[in-house]
Amino acid sequence: MIVSLLVGLSLFNVEDKPLVTFPIEVAGEAYVGKFFITTETPKDTIFNIDVGIQASMDVIDVAGHRFFIAYRDELYSGVQEGNVTFDPREAHYYLIGGFRFNVMDKVAASLFINHDCNHNIDRRYDSLKVVFNRITLSLGTPGAYTNNNLSKITTGQWYERLNGKITYEWFPHDTVIDALNSTDIYHAFRVEAIFDQPVYRYIYASARISTYLSRIKPKPDDPEAYEPFWGFEFAPQIGIGVVRERSALELYLKSWLVADIGDIGFREPNPWPYLVLNLRF
Image 1 (spheres, rainbow, N blue to C red):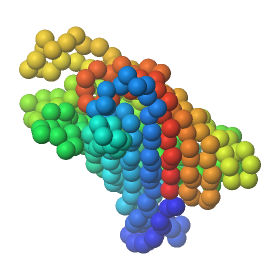
Image 2: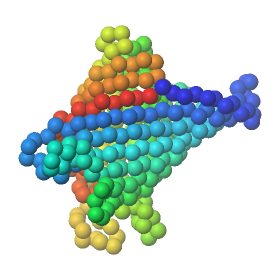
Image 3: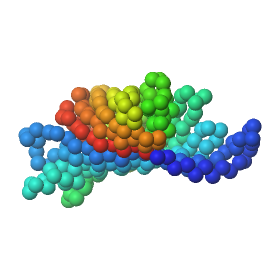
Image 4: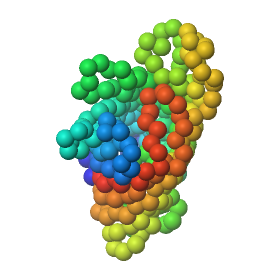
């Protein structure tokens, strides 16, 4: 569901169309996920139940190019003695702001700043706190950035149902920024692809692939911490969902076949089955 207020403030007219508008369009997702793990996993694991929500708002449109802001949070819970199956362990918060560019309605590009942090929850001290600041540049199909294409899942051509993007992230490190950047990542690349296939009426099947490649180096003040290396993640998923105009509810199964990114503030899940109920709006 996309809220479109379209408060059109015309500063200049180009063929009777306002050059600058304030669309106030909101899109996002909310999910709950469950790891199915072995009995050998410690009781204090954070690989049990995840919940999260994300919302992105387009604030200003200038000739089809938009300034947006976004917020996302992820809550990771574990298992506690005494039949407590939802024990909040960690939270990951994201604050994002930047620009999304439209290239002839065929390609989209985005440039934004992402500030996020990972914190312990309900623990004596925040020993796992990690702060990230990154400048991000990505290129992909328009449907990879918003949920505007959901209506095309059952009506569009195959190339309208295939979406993906390539993302580059730069984590600057110097005397000033290190105070707000405690991760050891310097560069990261992400490739994401999703294909939706209609099955019957409003029901569709989906397949996704996500890869993450990160360049990790020792900090300048601790060069002997470890040798530089590339961290890598690879996670495919398959799902089935129901779509109605501008919203979709999907149930999918995901597994991290490769997860080797080092102790840099991200979880490294084993290839356990991960079942997720996800709402896109």
